[in-house]
Length: 125
Ligand SMILES: [Zn+2]
Image 1 (tube, rainbow, N blue to C red):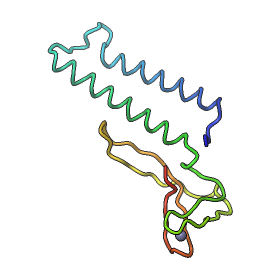
Image 2: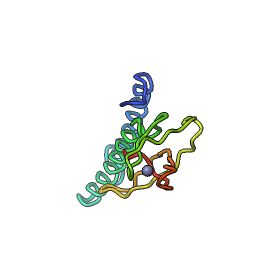
Image 3: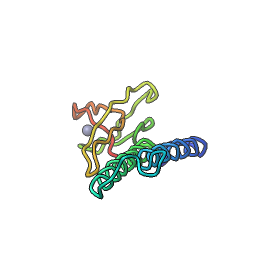
Image 4: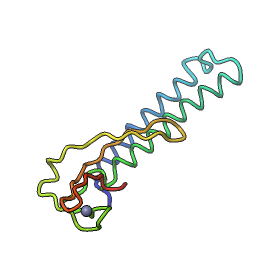
């Protein structure tokens, strides 16, 4: 389930395009070369910039998912029972950080507490 509106998606797409434009500028500069001479220099810069955009894409996708901030009911991953949350809008989001093949990615998830299991968990996503 998406938790993002079409309008917000459009705004985020625009922001991504602007970042892609800045990425292009960091590669090409104002003279088309930007001080990069050897093939290795060009390859390194292109890979670094591409990796940053890859991470950004992944973060966008993770943050647009409903599980980033689920509603009133999610299932406990241990006992499978529904874990109610009376006011999900007041649950604080916690930052999570994952190392991917292209670098570190940060995203937020809302924690839930299963009383019978006495465990705090983050809905999967
Ligand atoms: Zn449980």
